[in-house]
Amino acid sequence: MENIKENGFQTLSPKEVRQMAEKKRYRTIGIIILLMAIASFWFFARGIDPEITSTFGLNTGANVIKIPDLKLPAYATILVFAGFSLAIGLIQLFKGFGENSNTVMGGMILLFVFSFLIWAIQGKSINLAGMLRLSLLQAIPLTLGALSGIMCERSGVVNIGIEGMMLIGALTGTLLASASGSIWIGLVSALIAGGLIGYIHALLSIKYKVDQIISGMFINIFATGITSFIAAKFLVEFPELNQPGTFQVIKIPLLSRIPIIGGILFQQNLLVYATFVLLFVVHIGLYQTKWGLRMRMVGEHPRAAETLGVDVYRTRYIAVTLGGILAGMGGAYLTLGSVGRFDRLMTAGRGFIGLASMIFGNWNPFGAFGASFIFGFATSLQGKLAILNVPIPSQFLLMAPYVATMIVLVGVVGQVTAPAADGVPYDKEESH
Image (cartoon, rainbow, N blue to C red; front, side, top):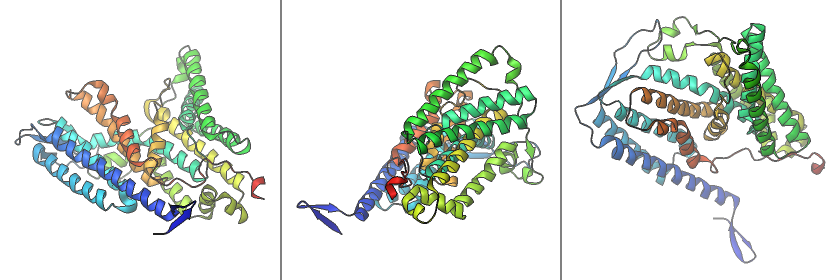
C-alpha cells in the first residue's frame, strides 16, 4: 500500500481512498440485498399455504398473439427468490460485482417487488403484461428527466430544476395546443419553453456563477408559483384552454403482435417512441462522437479541455439548454402524451425521481432508464394493489415509489462517481 507521510501521520493515497470507497459501496449494497432476502422470507413466505398459486396474465393490447397465463406456486417461488437474493447478497458483500453492482441491485429490487406481488395476489390473478406496460408509461417522464440531468451534469452543471422545467413544459404545451388546435404546436412550444428555462439556468450558473443548487431551486419555486397561478386563474375560468388532446397510439406492424412485449413496446404513442430513440441518440452522442467527448471533458477537467481548444462556456450552455428541452418534453408527455390536460403540480416529484434515476444509473442513459423503470414499476404496483384490496393501508401504497427511491439512494448516493467538475463553476480568468 502506498502511504504518504504528513505531519508525522500516514495518510492514504487517492488510489487507496477509492478502493476503500468501493469496498464500502459493495458492503452497503450487499447488506441491502441481504435485508431484502430476509424480508422476502419473513414477511411473504411465512404463513402462505404451499398449495396456493398466484396467476399472472401475459397478454395485453389488441392484435397480440395470445399465450397462456403464468401460474406460480406462491410459497415455493418466494422461497427460491429469497434464496437466490441471499446468495447474491453474500457475493456482493464479500466480493462485489464491480461496475455491475448497481445493475445487480436493481435486479434484486425487482425480484423483491415481484416476491411481494406474488404474496399480495396469492389465490388471485393479475395482468402482469398490463402492469409492465403501465410501468413503462410511468417510466417515460422519469427517463426524460434523467436524460435532462445527464446532459447537464455531464457538462459540469448540477440541475435540480428539472421539476420546474417539466411543469413549465407541461403547462405551455397544454395552453398552446388548446389555443391553436394543433397538438404539434403544443409539443414544439413545450420543448422551446423547457429550453428557455434551461438557458436561464445556464446563464445564472455559468455567466453569473450563482450557486447551481440555488438556481435550480429558484426555477422550481418560480415554476410552481406561475403554473399554479395560471391554472387557477385561467384554466378554471376557460376550460377550453385545458383541452389539448393527446397523441394517438401507433401500432408498429408485425412487432405489435409479438407476445408479451408487442403490447408493451410496440403499441405506444409518438412520445414513447421518441424517448426510445433519444436513449440511443444521447448514448451515442456522449460516448461515440467528438462532441460527446468534449462535453465529458468539460464535465471532468474543464481547464484541460480549454487547453485543447474546447470552448467550456459554449459547451455548457448548449448542454444545459438541451437538458431543458428534454425536461420540457417530459412535461409535454404528462399532458399531450398521457392525460390530455394540465393539473396543478402534476409532476408530483418526477423531476427529483428522475435525478435519482440518473444517479442510480451512474450518469448513463440506459442505466437511468433501468432505474426509471424500477420506479415506474413501484408506481404501477401501488395502483394495482389498491384495486386488489391488499390488506395494506392506502397511505403505504402511495409511498411505494418514494420508498423505492430512498432504498436506491441509501445504497448509491455518495458512492457512485459523479463527473469531477460537476457543480463547480468555471472561471476562465483563473486558468490563465
